[in-house]
Image 1 (spheres, rainbow, N blue to C red):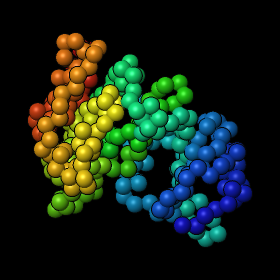
Image 2: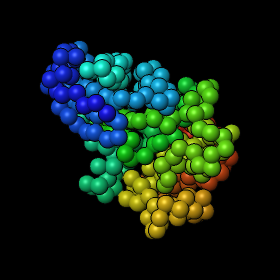
Image 3: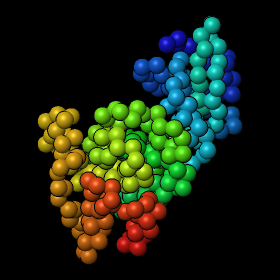
Length: 276
């Protein structure tokens, strides 16, 4: 892709000062800076915008709670090259993956706070007829105040819109090891908020134990898929859960068949509130 210089970016986006390059990959570049109105932001640039990117913009621009705010988006011309840009709220902190790599596992109070945040977020997404489909430690940020954010709606599904995945495809968009079986098997009619509940259960399990039960011990990607479909995960033993209600709740979230999970994210959120 065409790579604008910092000088070019500062001229084109004078409202953002102190621009610094953060990351590059594929057809995208990411910069950090300070917006005169919005404070700390990230500026994302890409030469190509496909249907999934357009849908992600449509989703995020609605300012969902717990999701970094999208302040502006559009195109700019750099020496005859059309470049798409997005200006988003910057979350100052670490990804949950980075946190787990540093500490191994979360303390129980922080893990419970995360679980509540994810369940409430899933219930809010459900109200908007959205399924995130990629809830995993890499897509969860923890800011400097210990608050959580969900990132990356790149493979989110808007249930009221036309699916962007071919019906005949054997595999749907997914992160193997966190995705529910009906999601990576592209069983479209079964994909709803219950797929996010599965992912949330796996994330919480990993946060408490330090391991992803479907990934640890797997020899390759195919093995992870088989384990996700067949493995009977050992129920959590939680010192602070003397009644076993929380362990039973998590066990229900990670059931292989969506019909065996809570019927809705709202129901799961309500159940969680009753046992904590």
